[in-house]
Image (cartoon, rainbow, N blue to C red; front, side, top):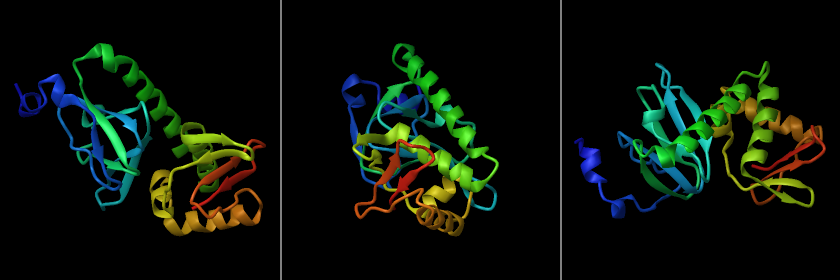
Length: 196
């Protein structure tokens, strides 16, 4: 029996745990984290220490080292997070969640393979609206603070490029910056509203 199995072997020890924004979820072999609330990103690094975002995961999603072949791997909290450890061998709980994880990862890969950075950014905003948005009168409101650097890391661009594109989108009326750091996506695509 591995140390992680001994450490979390009883059901009482598998209760929800809370994590602060910017903290890292511990990586436990043979366990997955089920996100009960909040948002995390999984990431790795290239040889030159360039961060690569592998996914952005929210309520109901799973994340864990067991789902990745990346040598360097982290699960970083983008918001306050509540998460529960699930044993990988409990297929009744993890099978459907694993299928959903794979499907979402494939959606994410489509964004990353956009032909241009501006298209990738627009597709990312649309995906965030679908995944994390909530309906308001003007469209989708996304209550997820991402810095320009985090957005750049997600789409494989530079922070300067993301800032320039967001400013350009705002000038063209595609996005609107709001005072409370939300993303607002109008229903009439491609009219987007984004607030940082």
